[in-house]
Amino acid sequence: MSVNPQTIARTGESVLATNRVLRNTYLLLSMTLLFSAAAAGLSMMMNVPPGVSLVTSLVALGLLWFVVPRTANSAAGLVTVFAVTGLLGFGLGPILNMYLKLANGPQIVMSAMGMTGGVFVGLSAYALISRRNFSFMGGFLMAGILVAFLAALVSVGAALFGHPMPGLALAVSVMFAVLMSGMILWQTSEIIHGGETNYILATVSLYVAIYNLFTSLLHILGVMNDD
Image (tube, rainbow, N blue to C red):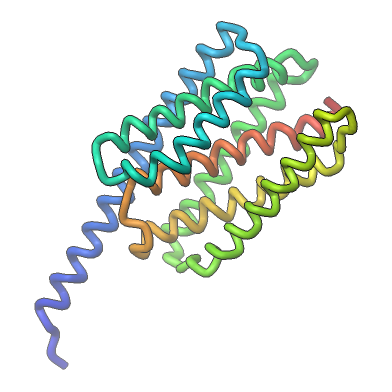
């Protein structure tokens, strides 16, 4: 059986390209997480009011939807990524301060951080080691996120009008925790199998998944601890 040298060359180039995207994604992801943590720390020291979280989240969402896709193939994309992660991190400060004021708040925050890190490392390692293709999860995840987002809007709206729905809010957090775990698995698989070749887009996707997973676990653990 003859082996086509061109086929071998193309396969080698594909593997190198995938490894490059994977390496750049994890490098940029680690930098954005550190930057986001610094922004959160600054926000906590400034004792920023809770309303800032909503404003920064909305601005970051606008950048994610309208700016990141248009700048992902240029140097401006890096600036946009740090702007998004910095805004989300800054908005996380008031939330962390709120939890840290609880009797067992530090334990809740540390547990959420540890669980988030464990889920990310575990699912990423599984995708990398098993080399399974999880592209079939894409449609399910998008539909699930849309449903969870709509449910979150209903929950927030009910709370704003003086009719909080704690059960729905908890269900939304559980949905997001599950969906973001699936997003980590799916996005890592996309990089490995060449479905995602832009490390900026891959980084943003993984960062958002980690961020939402962490905040969802914060809420879940807070409820479990009757806080």
